[in-house]
Length: 182
Ligand code: SF4
Image 1: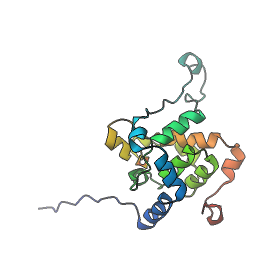
Image 2: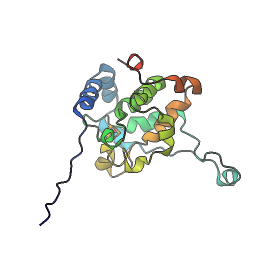
Image 3: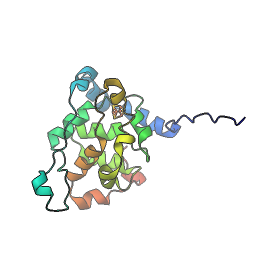
């Protein structure tokens, strides 16, 4: 009889866990968590990505999505519960520190949020558009499990941050040690 292979349990690597824990404990993160209770965060509706009208977009090959406005991106970021055990990171093939970058969007520090993404992903603005997030980071977002509603739109938050910066500046940042936030 063939031995059944036990299903491998995916876990966040120890060194990544350590980094997440360290950042989770930073003073600004604690303050931000305190500023809006989890219950209130869970009441915020998932933001809807604005789109071009069908009559307009059926005449060209330009993007359908228009990107989030600043307030929408902040509201969407507020929905993130900043979990102590952020399962979303496990769902990201390159292990982006999702809670940190989302919380940076919440406080409006878009430049730093891009630096966080670029630590493990050299093309985050592309991934923000083409990654199948609904079956990756969004699929295992703790918020989805907790509310049976919608998980955080991480890709749209990535795209939002990039649209706030001049293209050249955003492209220039690479994940070199000295470029990483402390
Ligand atoms: S699992 Fe979802 S709610 Fe928790 S930190 Fe990640 S994005 Fe935020």
